[in-house]
Image 1: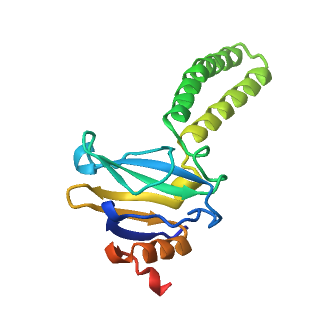
Image 2 (image 1 turned 180 degrees about the vertical axis):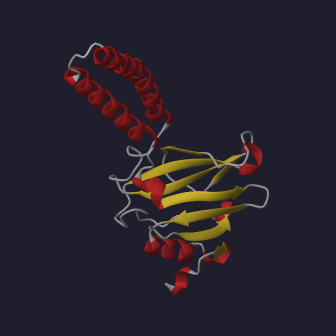
Image 3 (image 1 turned 45 degrees about the vertical axis):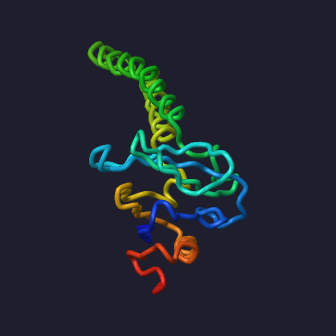
Length: 192
């Protein structure tokens, strides 16, 4: 089980260390993360990961009650690897393209069994289609390394507070040192 470090800081003063949060390598890319304030978007925090232009601090977006953070990363864990709306769209399209052939194969297996025929070909195609469906779902919805390394638990634009969760404890210590004036460690990272 992975342990996490939770840190609370001011949104307007948040700075991320100039190393990759996943592998602690040199920075070669920057990823933008737009988070909607949970008070305005219901009980969940919605993150929109994407490509970012060159750097900056967190930028409040008042119209949509959201804030954008800029996270420096290496190329391996950078903007080309995060999930976007396009990857989710690919998953939805793949689901609809594979659902009806899956249904057809299931019905075909039922027919073949009721007539006592061999179902080897149908089972093979069913396994291929189910595998394709599982791969497409993992591609579109499984969090990437950067999304697992840095996550946003609570965003409150009114109070100017964000709670971040880090899976890399070394990166959490660096983040805490960089933002120590405006940060409170919710898990006592210094004791580790």
